[in-house]
Image 1: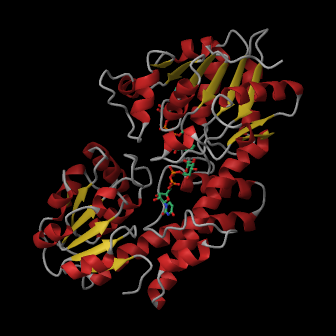
Image 2 (image 1 turned 45 degrees about the vertical axis):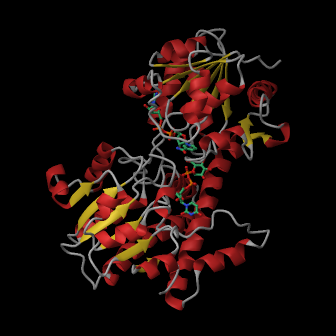
Length: 468
Ligand code: NAD
Ligand code: UGA
């Protein structure tokens, strides 16, 4: 019979583990949830007395305030967390491999493997181990092999796949009311019991028709498939935005007309400077690698093109800035508004802003950056990583970070909107215009501002997907 889950441990207190398990704690007061991580600074931030949490996510602080210290705990004691739990989420990072076989494509499963080996080493009782991280198809099989080869007598391990579909910026609302929760298990009686144990955790707040139970490999592949298809929509609309710019069609109107077809649907068709975030590119490259390993080169090439189109979009936008500013931005001051990969997050992983700024640096422009959430130290770290051949001092000769949009735009030749923060829409653009060099150029990489209104102020506005 399915075990009744009373204690949950989550390995990995990051963007997924933190919010996901905080919400489980809030919705399941009868379950004790402990989130463990090796990174002490991160755990300390989760435990900070004034709730200065390590990630910015609307609504998260409220959830943590309600549950922390009651049935929600954060700790660096990974072993104790494992020992006490009936069910363990593995929610560690799975970045793209930087070296070795599959470098640049395959997922680095080292963190998953280390966490799995730790479970095998310290568990003294049976556990349900849940793969929450996004992993290539059949990773659960490897986890099972490791666990079974190292387990003590009377310890049974059941492995489930339970990929996470939350988007950053809306994580809490996504977790409160998910489109679906997906659980994959072996179709054996034990596998089905484990699946039922996890299902009953989610059933505390998710309607049963939204909890889907499938086979392990389908579950793993569905996660990669969902991200690949979402990213493909953006690359499709961005490819069309290039045609719009060349023809005078308007990408907003095209997206609206196409999205009205109920088979296509209106969401996720916003043309942009390119998608960013820790997962889309990583997961597609992972799918490309998987396809190649399975000797399916045509399938690999198909998905690879989604990432290539995204790179093209970022290059194309940077070039449009240079072209518009009379073919040179050398020595010119460019203000970049937004550094996060999307609004309502402080996360900068794979943010399009990083690529744009690197391109502006290469053209020897002076760049000022403002973002309402990203810590300055994070911006420097990202710029340093993007230009390993430069020292921080060299980068700082060309780049300045400011504490307000107005300060960033002061005496600038051009403003580039890289992230769709609401505050950029509500800015006093008249004031900004008065502080800029003339002609004052504005490049809207997010279709965020009212271009017509800004033109009446005097801005020369360039928008994605409109040839003006
Ligand atoms: P993250 O880097 O924010 O967090 C991972 C955490 O795991 C880190 O704090 C790290 O210190 C910790 N960790 C690594 N190895 C450990 C170990 N052996 N023991 C204890 N702690 C360990 O990553 P994330 O953004 O939360 O992503 C985690 C996984 O979830 C990835 O596979 C990702 O693809 C997937 N995912 C992410 C999102 C998202 O929006 N970020 C959404 C869905 C799925
Ligand atoms: C995405 C998926 O939406 C989640 O379902 C998934 O769980 C997650 O990846 C993951 O696996 O990590 P996330 O990357 O947090 O979530 O944010 P999205 O809202 O998907 O945005 C990704 C990027 O696409 C952002 O840079 C965003 O600005 C861009 N985007 C999004 C567009 O350019 N146009 C759109 O219409 C939508």
